Amino acid sequence: MFFNLLRSEWFKLRKTKIGLILFIGPLFGLLIGLPSDLFDEVPDTVNEWEVTLLGMNLVYALLFLPLVTGVLASFICRYEHQAGGWKQLLALPVTRGKVFFAKYTLIMLLVFVVQILYLVAIFVVGTIKGFTDPFPMTIIWKSILGGWVATLPLVALQLWMSLIWKNFAAPFAVNVIFTLPAILAVNSERFGPFYPWAQPFSMMYVDDGAEGVFFVLWDQLLTVVGGSFILFFFGGWIYFRRKAV
View 1 (cartoon, rainbow, N blue to C red):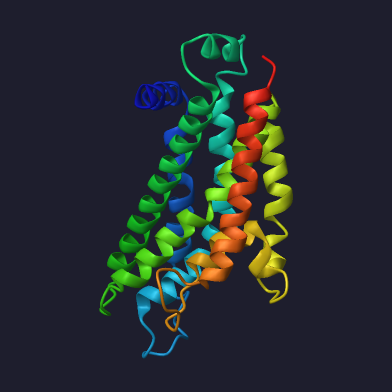
View 2 (view 1 turned 90 degrees about the horizontal axis):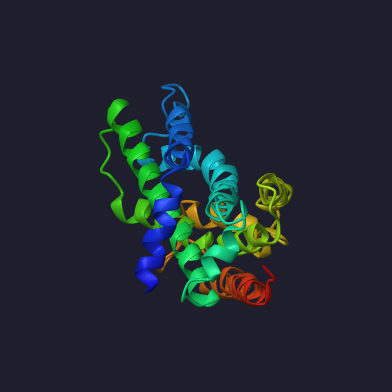
């Protein structure tokens, strides 16, 4: 039943311009990384791939990745907000919990696709610019997976907001309001590690000295990402179970 719900959600999304949205972020990353003189002042001892990733992440991980969660969440609830779609969906023999989880799962899968496309963009930039340094597979995968994990709470919150508001722009506006301060938060040792919208950049920031699965400490991962995920996910889940349709 769950996989049928997942497939149904995907069929509804296929009628939208979701494909264009998935490519926007990686495309911007590609345009940032391609200028040949962008990193000319970097010492030869530094891996070219890592420097390019750092430069591309400044826009992609700091701005686009948090913002795309709101767009995808709005799209996945747009169909039900039109012409009594919620009543039609919930009239089927499915639980609200499964509907919520199916929508959340599909958004996370789409965010993962965006991350893979971004990985392709990194490789294309290095290939076009003729990088000769070895491709740092472990470091780049840590960055890609770290950014994806960091969106877990953001997707949960944006899905919650999209369930509340019928207006497509409202959840996106909320996301923009909280995303822009992340530009300042990442430069603060006091607030940066605890600001959820700064976590995608923090977990994609290349740090050769970092040990473990990700670039941030496990305490930060569990308390900030894990804690905010639990708060936003179950807050949205409880709201949806009680939502009047």
